[in-house]
Length: 355
Image (cartoon, rainbow, N blue to C red; front, top):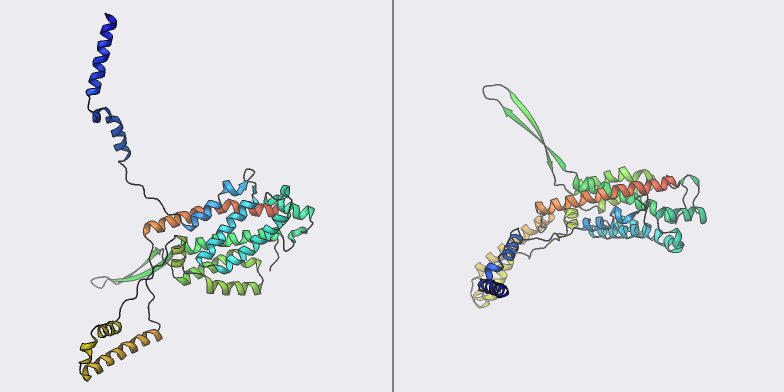
């Protein structure tokens, strides 16, 4: 009898569960799905060119042996990525110099035994102790891995200063206003300094020259200083073009707008029969109007007043993303450059001769 009662209770419970509506049985799962979909939709972030360089220069990737040395192949791979970005931005001369130094290190790396080339310290010791290429006091031989690594580091220091001065450093604008007091109380002058993130091409060139004076100028002779200065003045891209390229925003050229001359010629072609019936005075007037339009256009071209097609500007969110990526890259470069220089100083390979 007890067994019969248990079977009846279990059968009653099963039947009541089967009679329960489906939406009530799956209520907890539906609540979980609704709570997970309650947040805003995810918008994927587009990676900037600077973020790609930061990815390759991560200290956890480039620095080895608890941060005391640099991994040679990974360092060269990161420098190649920087070279691609420099070419994309428009720094062709700097990118060519970076490429030459990368090739010097690569040739020395390929010729060295595998046990003496994994890290920068091993490769430099191999050239000094085994090959005998370098002398005391930083008298390093060229071509060699030491020369390539030395100038790779100096180029990295230049790029670090260039990005800091040209993009991150805001330009200041000073505004002076004079207020006249009522009742003859005299005048008061107020000077306001406002920080602005916009900069012209001259500002980016000045930033490049400032970065050069802080990093590479002391290593160049007077002839190289003059050539390098002229190259920076002529090849440095404007700040707007630089940040637009680094952010991944390409310039879009709008379709040409139809002028009054083209519209009149188009309408004359569409209504060729009616134009033949026009009087000579109307034709003369139209020709005079066209010649006047062409003269005004040529005058604007001669005066340099013709405006380039508008280029897309960055949104505030894109500017913040680029600024964050740049600050992260500069922070990533700092310990690498510091350790890089310490290795050269410890091995007496810091060549201070000018080129």
